[in-house]
Amino acid sequence: MSSQSIRAIIFDIGGVLEIAPQRMTISDRWETRLGLPPGEINARMEDVWRGGAIGAITEADVHRSLEGRLGLSSAQVTEFMADLWTEYLGTLNTELAAYLGALRPRYATGILSNSFVGAREREQERYGFADLTDHIAYSHEIGMSKPDPRTYRLVCERLAVRPEQAIFVDDAERCVEGARAIGMHGVHFRSNAQAIAEIDALLSR
Image: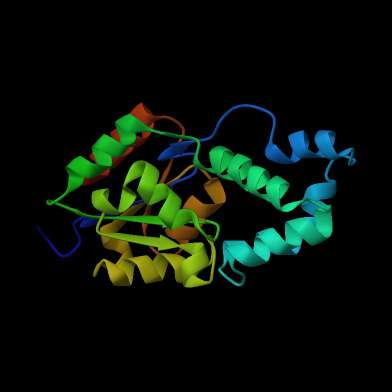
């Protein structure tokens, strides 16, 4: 294998390895339940969602904010968070997860995900992502989110590859473009068949 060959394949989670449910969002449901206007929950919680995405706050902070800003009881906070994680986790893309798992040991594999505080534990319990990959970089643990170029460089460093030796797969085009901007090979995920075909084509060069 030459120094320019692909040595690592890195996947996003949401919309790629996890399939989000196609239904009314948690905010819509809870706004209806609480009699709040559309968009009010996210308006009140915007900085909390942002802080949780880069690990600037804890899960306990999130719970306290739900109580203080939305007036939820402790029981309602528990219910709201259960709804949030159900929606967040979606269902496993079993075909793509199997493909990811089969890439090792020939290739290093990783995950780079814009996430939320508490995601690692819940995704590991439900889907075992840490058992499928060599490394997972969650935004709430590394303190920055895609498409910040530092996120891609960090996961490449942790997998001991140069950007041009790595493929990055994401359903968000701006995140794929962010990876390409530092020299990685980008695959814009639209379907399993399409993404797998593009990855295999890159690996066969």
